[in-house]
Image 1 (cartoon, one colour):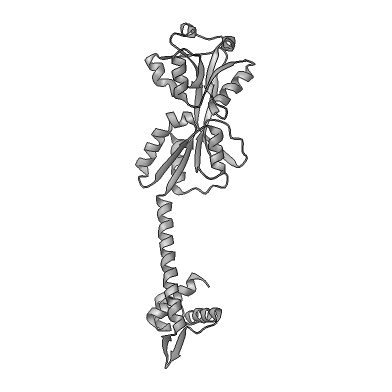
Image 2 (cartoon, rainbow, N blue to C red):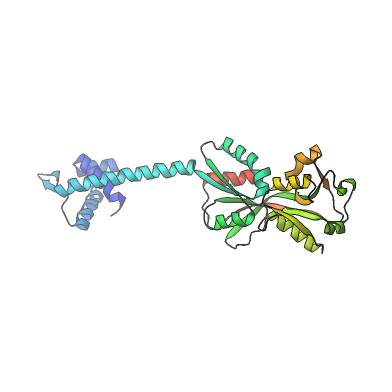
Length: 290
């Protein structure tokens, strides 16, 4: 039996007249009578007594009426709730560390101003872990700086980024206008952990230039890297966006490397089978237009 059958049944019960019920439902009387007959046939029980051209509910009819009203009310509640979730709802964002520290606060603020009824939940980690969360539906949309390896995750570029060589203001690099790329092989590097997009970009470019490197410290966040470099414990390659304040204050020095540039692209990532709500589409559009 369908919800349509139960709606017709309730309308007939309220009117206790097939003709009146048909008029209120904008149906023919024969269609209403057929729906009632189908209910009685399906349950193999009489729902109405028809006496002197009047309808009277049987005991079974009274019982079914209670269930039918409940089902119709539940269906109405479901429609209201689903529509409300579609219009408001929750977006679960995943951001790799650089994006989370430099871009996401501004993006989320702008999104909330335009969509005040939508909640935003953020999880920050490296690209590899964000990809795993997308695969297990723990995250709806990922903003990542590293490469996606799973064929089930699709990605769309939305912003370019450059990594830069940084050193402390007491490091001997600070007195040079340009760093010879082979000088990098002599230095101790403070870099991100495996699975990080920043580390992957650094390693790929160094390998492409056939340069070796020494790792003295592995960190899972940009703040620790910057603090270690400021303390003179090594040099690093990190997003320019992440060191703007320290470079402006003179705590960190950005140095160009002869013949070497570290470029990458920030990407919006999502599962290929993901259903996007209107709010998720709005957030993606915001990222692309930023």
